[in-house]
Amino acid sequence: MIHVVMLLGCAAVIYLACEWFVNAVEWLGVEFKVGAVAVGTILAAVGTALPESVVTLVAVLFGSRQQGDDIAVGAAMGGPLVVGTIAYGVAGAVLIWRRQRATAGAAISGSSAAEDRDTLPAPDLTGVDTGRLAKDQAWFLAIYVGKVALGLLAFAIKPWLGLLFFAAYGVYFWRELRADGAHASEEELAPLKLQPRVARPARWAVLSQTAATLVLIFLASQLFVRQLEWAGPELGLSPVVVALLLAPVATELPEVLNAVIWVRQGKTQLALANISGSMMIQATVPSGIGILFTAWHFDAALILAAAMTASAISYLMWLLKAGKLTGGRLAGAFGFYAAFAVGLVFVA
Image (cartoon, one colour):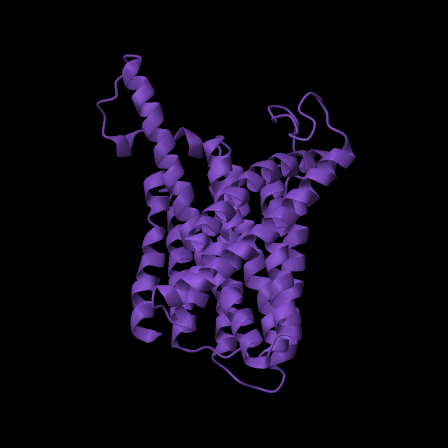
C-alpha cells in the first residue's frame, strides 16, 4: 500500500511542480527575450529533459557495466517513444475535452450544436504553426533513423559518432533561437506564482522559481521511477518490460503534464512546441551519451520501440503536412504506444 501511496503522491507533486514550472518558464522567455515558440522548444524542453540526460550519464559512468548500458540505451529509445506517442496523445485528448466544453457551452447559449463534432472548427489549433512543427518532426526523424541504424551496426569508430548527435542538437538549438521574429510577450501571462501581486516579477524570482521547480520535478520523477521498479515484479513483468514500457512513462511525465497544462490554458502552440523540443533532446543528447559509452547494440525489443516511434512521427508528419491535424487524430498517437505494449509481450 505504501508504494501505491508514494506513486500517487509523486504524480501529484510532479503535476503541481509543472504548474509552477510552466508559469516560470514563460516569464523566463520574457526576461531573456526568447522567441515565443522557442520558449517551448528550447527553454521548457531543456529544463525537463536535462535531468534525464544527467541520469543517463551517471548510469554509464558509475553504474555496473551491463546495468548502466541497459539504462542508457533504454532511456535513449524509450524517451522518444513515450513523448512521440503518449505526450501527443494526451495533448489531443485535452483538446477533445476543450472542444466538448465549447460545444456544450454553445448548445446552452442556443448556438447550433447539432453539427457533427468532428466537423466543427478547432479554435485551439488555429494558431498552431503546423509547417514549423512538420519541419521539426522531419528533423527528428532523420536523426532518429541515423541513431537506430547505428544500433544495428558494429564498427571501430562508432563510439566517436556520438559527438555528431551533440552537434546536431547544437544546430537545432541555434536554428530555434533564430527562427522566431517576435520575442515572448508578457501580455496575458499569469502573474509569477512566487510574486503573485507584482505586475513584472524580478529576475531573481523568475530564476529561483524555475530552478526550484526543476529540482522538485527531478527528485519526484526519480522517486516515481523507483516505485515503478517495485511495481514491475509485483505485476509479474520482466525487467525489460519495466525498462522500456513503464520507466520511460515516469521519466517523461513532466513533458506530458506540461502539455496538459498548456493545452488546458489554450496555449496549444507552446504545448506542441514543448513536445517537439523534448523529442529533439531525447533523440540527440542521451543518444550521444549512449553511443559514446556503451556498445549501442539493439535487441528485438529496442527495434520494436524504434519502429513504433518512427511510425508515430510519420503519422504526425502526415497530419501536419496534409492539414488534417485535429484533437481526435492527435489522440490517435496513443495507438502506437498500445501497439508497442502488445508487441513487447511477444519479443521481451
